[in-house]
Image (tube, rainbow, N blue to C red; front, side):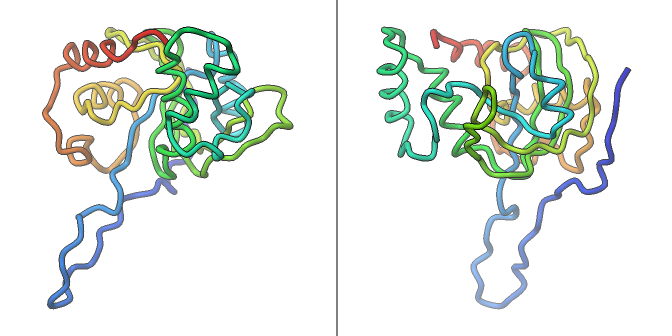
Length: 212
């Protein structure tokens, strides 16, 4: 059974006025909205909490406030030192960096479980905040979750904690149709990139799913 919340307050693109004589026309859109996949921890165990309390989060709490890191390299260095590992921590580093610095208010986020299930979608409504008072997952952003359900896909997805899928409009369109995401624009209007088939999109995404 699917639960849908009011979507009347969905943020829409703002078109800048370029009518003034002599003004250099700016880009049509102020900022291209991104689509993100997020895993509510292992086996989606935090999903109900996400939905009920209107937020999303990631772990790696030992890093503390992520805003103190100037770049991905700094996060990666701290992560390797904290967890005493020889692995690259590439995906973990990217997840932390994108969560704190790349996600923006108005972006679309889709909660997932495993490789073929989706649990809901919402709109990011806050900047990053650090909440060490939480029992776990101290890195948080508010989300206006619009729908909750259980959708099984006939295509697989990556298992990373956080993934920006904006560059793959066919993949995004497939999710929009599957979940019933309500937007007034096409992903093809957001990113001027080569269109990929679902198979090619997935192959490209998996190519980046190396050792964390």
